Image 1 (cartoon, protein in one colour):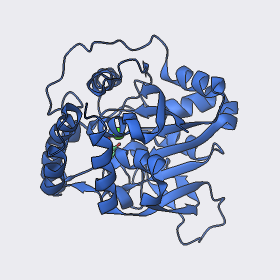
Image 2 (cartoon, rainbow, N blue to C red):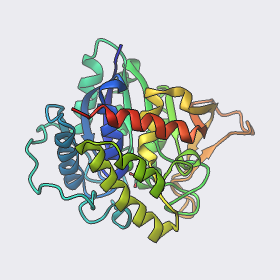
Image 3 (tube, rainbow, N blue to C red):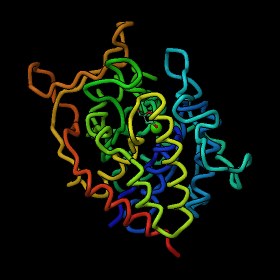
Image 4 (cartoon, protein in one colour):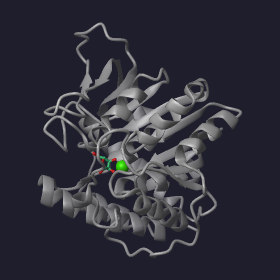
Amino acid sequence: MSEKIIMDCDPGHDDAIAMILAGARTSHLEILAVTTVSGNQAVSKNTRNALNVLDIMGKGEIPVSMGASRPLIKEPSFAEEIHGVTGLDGPKLPETPRHHATPHHAADVIIDAVKNSDEPVTIVATGPLTNIATALIRDAKIVQNIKSITIMGGGTFGNWTPTAEFNIWADAEAAQRVFNCGARINVFGLDVTHQVLATDDIIQRFALINNDVAGFVVELLKFFKSTYKTYFDMDGGPIHDACAILYLIKPELFKMQHTHIAIEHHSALTYGTMSVDLNNVTDGEKNAYFAVDVNVEAIWQVMEQLLADYNL
Ligand code: BDR
Ligand code: CA
């Protein structure tokens, strides 16, 4: 049986890979909608990228809806150093995608898709949490039909400040709302995503898969690897966002810990920091399942199988 998902994202190299894995035939995930948010780049660029990626996947029929052009409170900022001026630099993509975004705002699309579904829906969040917080502010009752909110973000250390990860830092007020909404929350932070690095060896393995979608992933990973070398001196791009999708496909790839998570959004020094109570030192309510470990080699094998699904 397939699981119904909404992908709220800011593609973004690793968001694009997450979409491709979700759309693979044997993922057993059904993408109801892709919604876009300001994050890696301006939301208009992220939307264009989402449309182009779906087209490459042969899934242009999946509706894309554009959402927030800025965070709830702070000014927008982008991760251009990592994802380039288009948000998806590397592979050559059409200026004008073949399909159009719907005229509806992402938050309304999320509300309608969740409310109208005959079974609980999973929201996969791989960008800042602005659209999801907005949907929850507009209609808190949607929580009743959310199976999980499965998030790439945060961790016990940072990549944008010493203590904050980009997606959470980009809109910490939104993140705080989402973590307190009462839905089941699964979190894939830097603790696991920085273990899953697409080094040259991994890129070569994917290059052996003989189809255009795998070829596109190889181009994405080459660019991602180069910016991660320049800015973080790492030997491969972490496939961050793909972890959230891989968990839904094969939960046993990860070890999860039920814990209390809070988001700092007052202090200038630690804005966007995720406080993860792994040692149970508070009596805060356990409101999230946090990934503490990952089976790295099994991840690459599962990705190879899913990418091979795109063979004709
Ligand atoms: C997250 O930030 C973005 O740059 C990536 O797409 C990922 O969602 C990693 O910190
Ligand atoms: Ca992302």
